[in-house]
Structure formats: C-alpha cells, structure tokens
Image 1 (spheres, rainbow, N blue to C red):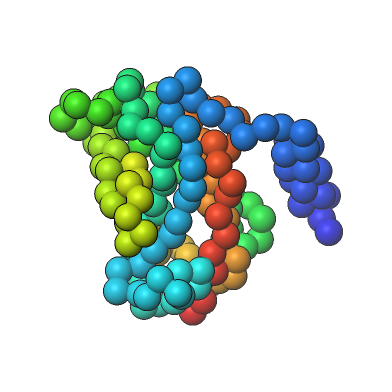
Image 2 (tube, rainbow, N blue to C red):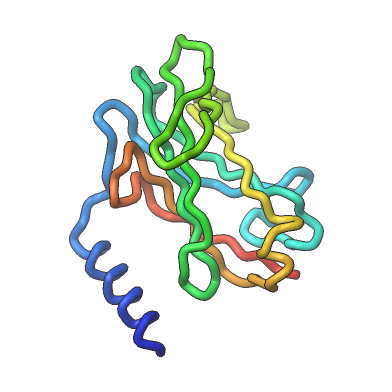
Length: 171
C-alpha cells in the first residue's frame, strides 16, 4: 500500500470512528439509492458504464425542508480517491425552486425541490433526484470500473448525513 493510500485509509478510519451520522437542524437524511433509467430495481447495484449515460442518485429525507439547505454528494472511485464532489441547493417546501449562488461555484446553481412520492409499499417518501454523468466522462475513457461509493452531506458538514452507498460500474 502506498504512503498516500495508507494516510487516506487512516484518516478515513479516524474520521469515521466514533462519529455519529451528522444531521442538519431541520432536515434528516434517511437513505441514498442509485438508479439507471430502464434498469430493473433488482439490478440497481451494478451498472454498465458503456451502456449508461447517466445514473441518478436519489436522496430520501425524513421531512420536507423548512429552510434552504445544501446537499453535497461525494463520489469515491474504485481506487479509493475522491472522484467528484457535487453540491446542490435545496429549496424550502412551499417555495418555487430557483437558482442560488454556492461558494466556490462560478455560476448560480439550480435549486432542487424535495418531492413527496408514494412508493409501491404505500409509504410516502421525501426525495430529490440528482444526475451523475457516466457516459462520455473519464469513468469510461480511463476505465474507472469497479466498486464506487457515494456519500451525502448536508449544509457543509464533514460527516455524512446517512450511511454511504456502494455501487459497481462495469465496462
């Protein structure tokens, strides 16, 4: 194991050890899911990178947001390194989603609106769907195939707001 990977593994262990799942003042993350259009839900953990243009990350919350929030999705590649971190503003319930400036982003970003949907089990879920580009990216051109991880963080927290999700990208 290289010195860099050893430090990354040690820091990940230390940051995760003993830390509770972070929550925002009025928004609680419940779960993450990764889906691809037209793919049966039984196969949701493995996707063909050469046949998939975009994956969709679905974040589920316990409640509707009563104020503005920032949702950050952090993707770790199969080699254990940060691939991409994407931050999205979330609009409070009852307000039409617009655009908002995010620190370190050059242009305003479209706000996400948390929608309440009823699942096949009859339970209501408050969710946002975020596209994650796969086709035409360095994932395919550099052969970044294998086990990926995505974590969700709220409002600049250093720790995830729910358990991270792993999925596999194949050629």
